[in-house]
Length: 388
Image (cartoon, rainbow, N blue to C red):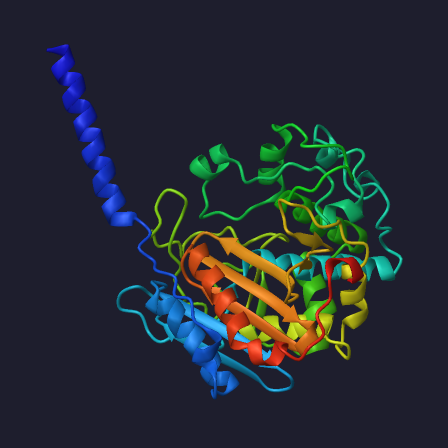
């Protein structure tokens, strides 16, 4: 009798798991396009083809900003919801997630230029004792190491936190410190490379401590106003026009995540239109950009290429080491994935956003982008990892 009960229980569990898998499984089909497909098309037509391929592959919605030379284009595909949604506006504010780290690094570097922060100071110089106490490497890591992910500060991306955390509430410093302080340091500061969202939340906190201003005000002063941005917000769950629903968590690939608020702190708190993100990348990374001095400083002294990361890590600006150089960052919060890249050899910038937690589709967009720009890159000079 006991054996029969156990067998029936196991069968029911298996059936429930199969039902959930059938309901929530990732059904995307990344579509890879060849360079020949883009021959004879305008930049806008090529961009639309890439966005359409993402939606044809299973994304509920996609946005792509593309600037090659002077004139940028923004295209969209899909809808704001999986069912019953409206067409996506090119100006909708997007949850660009960790692309926000570019903004945070730029703010901290600017404050260092003003003499308010020494990047080689230990973070304990600027942060209250209650923050540093019991934080792994908190008493020895430097501000510079926070920005290039070599501080050895543990992250909040921990399984227990993801399963039991209330993601409808914002990420506060107190919340992430509780997670970081219960972990062991991965290495001594400067002796390794490990991505840390907590490190960027600490960097944003330092900026607030030395200025007495909110981080939202600092982004407004240093980035938004100088560049004349019109659709950039920080730390707001649902700014005007933000109606693009995202889908997917680790355990439920097609759950609607619109109510979640992982995008709330200096590691991922920016919401902006694709055009505004493109304008920031242009300002930082184009030779004549309005913030090119900051961009240059953010790329200096990168932590070198590693087999794990396949890129050089600067201050929130990663440089790929393949035959076509990309400089920028990717982003991922519940239900949304993005990338923002500059291609300096051809004076191009691209910002892509997909409204599902679908990394294969985003990778396909990146591959398709490079194929679409193949004719521009054929005549450009390619740099090697040794001479970058």
